[in-house]
Image 1 (cartoon, rainbow, N blue to C red):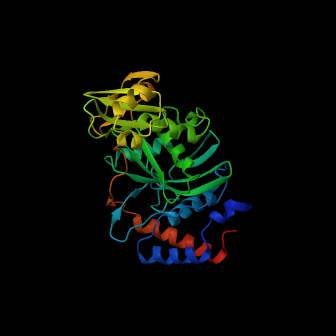
Image 2: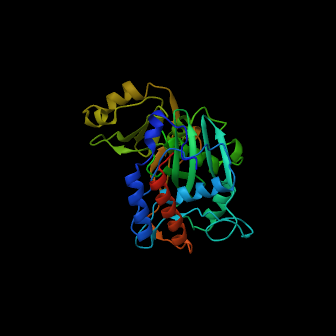
Image 3: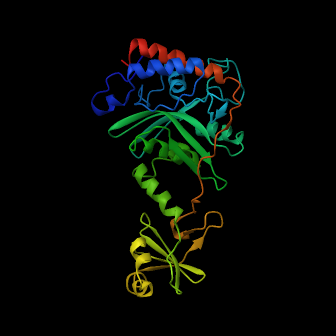
Length: 327
């Protein structure tokens, strides 16, 4: 087994110690709650590997997944999601889910194909679910699960479970791949995943906060990623290219003067639009709005008929790793 063979330095510390893995194996075996575990990449995400490596890939993800003790939680993208459901090596006895490599913007991520994830999503009735991934990026790597939610507007909200801040760029890459019409080219259109995240933040806009006793200005909101201030004047919201300190503005006794001197004089973008769902202000020049209320749903009943087999495969892998060690 190539469990991170050759990894040294800071990234080598991103593997759980043997004691924790041994405890995890026991918890998985006994059916208790097990939180998600994110670690460094076990193998090179760019290497597809043979049958044994593919098997280890799924077993290790099962070991790292979040598992509940009461039958509720989040469905996991299964290892047997194929159109024909033919016989194969998955825990169910069916053919393995097709995994694909997506690269660009300094990130490489191996995960179930975008087509298979979208197909699985169609069966979830809008519920959040978890997707297994393994990826690397400049200065590090990650393996584990990404929680995914597709909004009614076609936006994919993604979050790496237990990921460190720099590892979250792999979760951002998953969102980019799932939203793209050309998944294999999805990452190449960005300089970095930080750039893409900033773009999403620009599109989200900002909440308009009441500012107190002004009869002229009803509220103000700031989006630092877009570099703009939204000002609600009576029933309209206007956009100017300036980042205002909302707290200082709200505390001022001369809000009109500050607006005239520090906001109105800055380059105007015109009227903003207001989302009916989240009441957030946004400007259409930044792209399609991402609703501020978009997020993951609460846990529900898990209906995976092979959930115990998947837990068992994770437990066996954890037990083997506890005995043999990472290397």
